[in-house]
Length: 152
Length: 141
Image 1: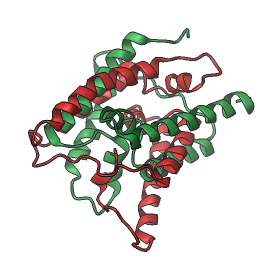
Image 2: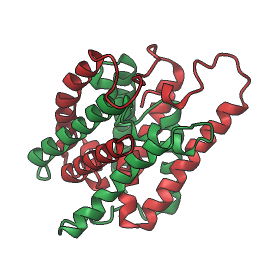
Image 3: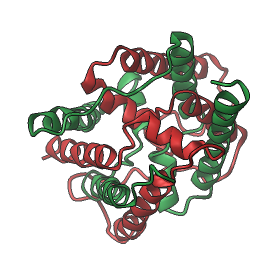
Image 4: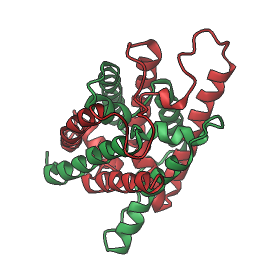
């Protein structure tokens, strides 16, 4: 079950991206292009997702532990800092350039599109560069080096 | 708003929310795709199996959809390889520096009413809108 559960969650998540059209960069760019033929669909996707997620997470908060694991991996940070803002800014520029964010990019690997393969390889490279940069910095104040401590 | 598809957007969005909640309730993990993927690349991380399973599920969806006659069209991407590589690098580095992407911050984080995630989502939405405005309207692309 420890493997089946995330697999099924991945299938449901992927179905949501596919049905909503968010796997298509043109659909995403239609939302981001507020000065063009604006398509509000992405806002509806987010609203519907949050309508399910918010009560669901509240339910999880009120349960002592997950069904299949010893504990919850809730993100630990709470303050707004420069890396959060700069990182989100860089991500937004990349997202706006092509219309792909990590979920749709990985799901689109199924189409074997050369552009998607190159995008995912570059995305992985960017993540590895970040890890190497973090590892090379002197340890001044590393809140928590665990991957699970990230927000998402 | 000729391209607006509210019904499929609402159904798809609800499924994305359901997946995020199930992953947390069952495994205790945040359904943040950039974090899940980055954990696969990080040699220090020891919990790779559930990450592989989740991403395998994501990639299997278009394959299964194809079998039942709803094949997914290959995404339309910019012609320039330089733009694709630059965008990939920015998305990879930026999501790690900022601690999440559209799913981790935009759905899971806002779903938990996290001020960090609300801030991050506003920032990446604004920079993405500005990027599209510049590339589509000012540079004539």
